[in-house]
Image (cartoon, rainbow, N blue to C red):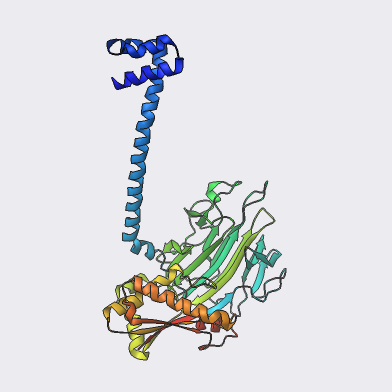
Amino acid sequence: MKKYILTAALFALICGTASAQGLLGRLGERAKQAVENNVGNKIEKGVNDLLDGKKKDKKDKQANEDQESEEAGVEAKETVDFAEIQAKSDFKRGANVFFEDNLNGEQMGEFPSKWDLLEGSEVEVVNIKGAKAIRMEASRIQPLMEEKEYLPEEFTIEFDVLAQPAEEGSGWDGTLDLIMDGADGKRVFDIRMSPEYHPYYGGEYSGIGWGWGAENPNGNKMEGEPGRQTINRYLKKNEWNHIAFSFNKRAFKMYLNYQRIVNIPNMIQPRSWWMDGSSDSDKGIFVTNIVMAKGAVDLYERNATDYSSAVEKAIAETGKFVTNNILFETGKATLKPESMEEIEKVADYMKKNPNARFEVQGHTDNQGSDKVNDPLSQQRAEAVVKALEEKGVDPFNLRAVGKGAHEPVADNKTDEGRAKNRRVEFIKK
């Protein structure tokens, strides 16, 4: 009934005629008949739309509330599933760095001094997106090493890569192939990395995938043409992407922006590696911050042992635990995700030994001035203390101290020495 009154009122308001106004006085049984004529039906539709709109607003409000509840549930679920997320962020750099190149000291426009050219000619040092980088265009390079087979049985490789969007009319954005060879020269692993879409070849060649004639762990070539297994991951366009690899005796893992995307339990031992950069654009592909280190992510079966045993052993023998696996963003006190496994070990030990007290020391190399390094090391030590507190450690048992570059443990003249000096020490008090 209220609906028909509203219908007649709207009709009177729109028409502004005496007959329409009279309709308001003849409500009741005749109201239904009035709205069943052609004009009345149109008005009723307008009223229905109006009422439905109110219902829709109410429904949308409820949907928004439901969405907020659902998002809250997702947040709660992510908190619950953090261990699973962290498991895919288990990368940690090998303990002993034996090759590092951030391009510092390199002359712009020249071939990078720590690399060798295998194919092509367009390789040079450039400045891009706030960093010095190696630009490759239809070229192949490899680290300049004394030994032909230099990768140990446990190693990590890291670098940052940038692929810019293709220019209008170009066939594809920049792509980067990373190839690992075994002792007999056979291709063990070949992964191609590119942004979201390959306009010329299509989705099959887009994103990240491995194969391309590489050998399977059993020594057989991968089936299919071109024998590529696509991974549903992509490089972010026009942004720096962090790539990392870990090989431990037989287990191979790859990480994109600190999340594991490849996990091969058995693979032939790689002995060397090289990069092949290409693009149909004259912009090319860019890499920087390349680090190779001896040591790797622990084999899975090792995780069955006491998580804090390494910390406990070091403290029992020396009274301190020293680690190079707590990493920070360059020039900042922001912890990288791969640092959390090491922090978890310390937290586990401290919760089992609630009366133990530690001085958490932050150390830097000598790159930069003391005016910068001293406060930075203090801030980094405080960041570690905060992370431990969030893991349930009593902050009363922790004291953050920044040591800057004043207590080196290795020669700051070499990349390996500087890597050792960038460390966090937990000194038992």
